[in-house]
Amino acid sequence: MAQKAGDAAGAGKIYRRILKTEPGNGRARYLLGVACLQQGKFAMGRKVLEQALVRDPKNSDILYSLGKALQKLGDRGKALRNLEAARDLAPDRADVWAAIGDVLQQQHRPHEAITAYARALELQPDDWRVFANAAIVHLSAGNLEEGAAMLRRLAKERRHPTVLLNLALAEQSLGNSAEAARLFDELLALEPDNVDALAGRALQLERLGRGAEARKLLQGLDEASFRRSMPALALAKIALAHDDEAKSLTNRASGYSEALLVKPTMSVHDQALLHFAQGHLRDRLGDFRAAFDAVSAGNALSPVAYDPVATEQRFENLRGFFTKERFAGLARSVVRSERPIFIVGVPRSGTSLVEQILDSHPDVAGAGELVDIQSIEKEIGAGEAPHRLAELRAEDLDPYAARYLAVLEETNAGAARVTDKLPSNFERLGLIAQLFPGARVVHCVRDPLDTCLSCFFQGFRFRNAYSFSLPHLGHYYAQYTKLMAHWREVLPIPMLDVRYETLVEKPAETIAGMLEFCDLEWDDNCLAFHENPRIVATASVDQVRQPIYTNSIGRAARYSQHLKPLVRALRAHGVEFGNATAPRAD
Image (cartoon, rainbow, N blue to C red; front, side):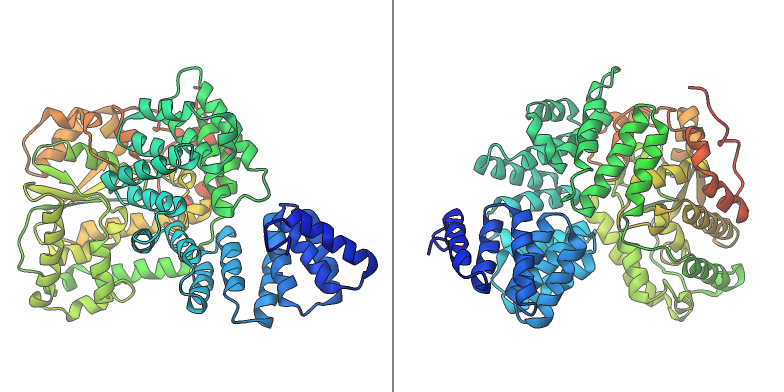
């Protein structure tokens, strides 16, 4: 009765008295373990439950509770084994499936977690907490639209702080700034001291270019607030963008990240984010060895694998199919539009900067990273089988082209040009040339070592699997250079190479060339791109908020002793680069 009434301590005393006279009472020992967990005494609960399990090893209740105790103590491997044993004994227990999903989520195994949550919801469809956790896993896996849609549906019925917070973060990531602000305001009205909500609000202010307000908001938090990952990550972001010359905020943020990384209960997802944050912070402080070690640790936690053989085959298929002779005989859409400008290249090669510059022109709208060409390729089935493009007629291509142009129209109905800066569209330039014979392609190029190092530091999580390993980065970069060289030879669409280093060193001259290529008149706003209030949703948001700077040129030289695997991979595949590995005196 005491336990049901919420008096776990009182219940524990009762079970201990029972066990003194009846040491073999397995039920009392199990309930004592549960009472310990309810009081937050997880180590004690684990010990008691393990004793109970020895006497009753096929008891799903004991296995489930022991799994929960181990999860709280950070021993996720043993937690999962106990929970899976409970599942095998009682496959129709929704709580067991949900607990398995929780552990898998913490282990950064989102696809398996989604499967477990789905089974839990089949067994207990009205469990809104499990539904919310499933949505959150979709978000962490990069399935932003699906996760946000689930949370929007749930938020209609439950305005719970966890639901509102994660929905606000999802809307922010999707670029829905006004809705994110409304949700943060609603959440902070419910819980004014919710430090995760305050951290999320600060990140939103930073993204809107209101860094001083973001910094002030975080500086109002007490020390205890930064024992949570989200405020610590927000402070790291603000420090990197807005610290003073003394770097006091950067040092402080680095200390918080370091302290959090020793917590055994930290989820793998948060560990990865903190490692990458720490890498950027130590880089800013000039501690390059610690910076490289931090991002290496973050990359090691990636749950996705790169397949160099499959990648090489895919690129070879593209080069083999798209010969100059074959392309001349392929159908092309009769839709003629000079509106699309495709900005392509390897990530971190300057695509965001180029788009921000062009978007600052009054006749251009930046659409960001659109996935529509990728979706069209998938519908056709041309990603792994480009020969299917030979089966298409002009009347098959026209609806795809019209659909894409409708997306550009929704982005900005009045703009003469609309940019699509999904970097990986360089893989789809053959399809793009079929869909839009009049399209322009701006190809961003940066020093290979600087580009690959920047990718290695970025932490793309579930995208760009090649970026988590230096040899894999070298391999992918080589495949990219071969494909771009091939496109230049065989495709009859205009392409302009924009070198990042030239853009930084000669901005006016380079921008003038970009505008001429796009058939646009000169506009001074393009030089003042950092004053553009446009929301940028990519990793380069800090760069486009500042005037052009040269700090990123030759950055690889600071890490020359760490980049030998990358250098070997690039050279093995014939990629040429300058003397960027030489040490640089700063």
